[in-house]
Amino acid sequence: MNVPQHVAIILDGNGRWAQSIGMPRNFGHIRGAKNLETICKDAWDLGIKYLTVYLFSTENWKRSQEEVSALMQLFRRYTKTSLRMARENNMRVRVIGDPSAFSPALQANLRELEESSKNNTGLQFQIALNYGSRDEITRAVRALSADCRAGRLDSEKITEETIASYLDTAEIPDPDLLIRTSGEMRLSNYLLWQMAYTEFYFTDVPWPEFHKEELVKAIEMYNRRNRRYGGLEKEEG
Ligand code: IPE
Ligand code: IPE
Ligand code: MG
Image 1: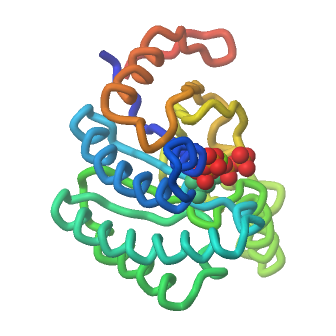
Image 2 (image 1 turned 60 degrees about the vertical axis):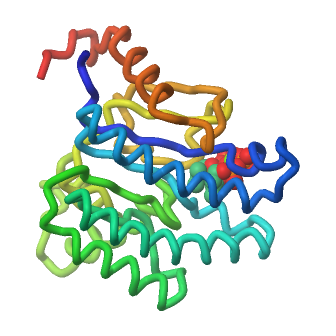
């Protein structure tokens, strides 16, 4: 089986899943975070090298204050778990998005997580937090214009690679496969630039029930697709 090098996931449906079993939405988020730990290990076992997951979008601040603060609390706990997982599994964790809106404590945890795992060579795990593609591109354009003004960059020489290097995902290859759980078929402002040629896989399974067999199904589907770039077959490898 040809395993995609980089898998991106929109882990959706935590709230609906919890409500369907008569529990509060936050219970779904807790179970969702737990499931993510397992999926990281499964992904690595299957041969996936990069995994990028959407945990909190720039639009998610619009949710009730109660839900947002429960999520912030969960992220603080999750960074601790991730720190341990990164150490135990040689996993490198990077944050994409704009963490400046988070509490200083959470920001410090995230920096520690990135810093302490930066030399790890196992799963390259990206967590998208306060992430939105349009926000990412806006921040990139600002930084790029500042460099042009300061004479560090010649605007005539800007290429696609230059733009990619200003994004939060600089140095990370584009995703080969996107998975979105729980039935929705939209991108919700996720990796718009990076997914120009990504294969999409949608499933009705809600995130807390998305286990290894489901990941294998997505990879099998990816294998059945005839990957083409501009009309040409993609070369293997
Ligand atoms: C995904 O689950 C997790 C986050 C966006 C934080 P949702 O919270 O979106 O769950 P549904 O889509 O409402 O069921
Ligand atoms: C996208 O899911 C964001 C995350 C998974 C973090 P949402 O559930 O927030 O997206 P919409 O609002 O349904 O598009
Ligand atoms: Mg949702």
